[in-house]
Structure formats: structure tokens, C-alpha cells
Length: 155
Image (cartoon, rainbow, N blue to C red):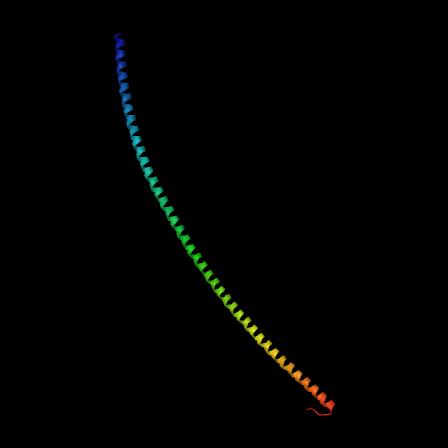
């Protein structure tokens, strides 16, 4: 029995050592786990900070790109507006030229009609004079024929 007690005693000692060792291992594991958690937390914090910085850089690039595109669009719009203004001015000048040409043409037509009317009036007057002259000549011819028939000479 003594031997058994001695063995039990040794077993208890071994068991206590084992439990202490287990407790120490457990504490060591908990410390390592806490250290790893802390390290993971720090890495996560660094990663989030880095991610935030990269997001900020990306957003700045997007804003710059948007501003650049807006500026390009404004420049193109100004260019197109100038081109459109030039075209409008050319159309206005062309329209004014056409109006002026039309007015000149209408004046020439009116002048031509006036000249034609004057010519027609002159022609009518000339025809009237010629008709009167013919009538006078015919009247003289009739008088000559009468005078010749009567034996007299021309009047």
C-alpha cells in the first residue's frame, strides 16, 4: 500500500506538474493569441488607412479627369460657337447681298419697263405722225388727181 500511496503521490505530483504546465501553456497561448490579435488589429488599421489613402488618390484622379473633360468640352463648345457665329455672319452677308442684288434687279426691270414704255410712246407718236403724213399725202394726191382731171396743175 505504501507503494501504492507513493505511486499515487507521484501521480499527483505529475498531475499537478502537468496541470501547471498546461496552465502555463494556456497562458502562453493566450498571450500569443492576444499578441497576434494586436498585430492583426494593427495590420488591419494600416490596411484601412492605406485603403483610405488610395481611395482618396483615386477620387482626386477622378475629379481631375472630370475637370479636364469639362474644360475640353467648354473649349470645344467655344470653338463650335465661334464656327457657328462665323457661318451665321456669312449667311447674313449672303442674304444682304441677295437682297441688294434683288433690289438692283428690280430697279433694272423697272428701268427697262420705263424705257420700253417710252419707246412704245415714241413709236405710237411716230406712227401717228406717219399716219397723218400719209393721210396728208393721200389728200394731196387726191387733190392732184382732181386738179389734173380738171386740167390744172398741182396747187
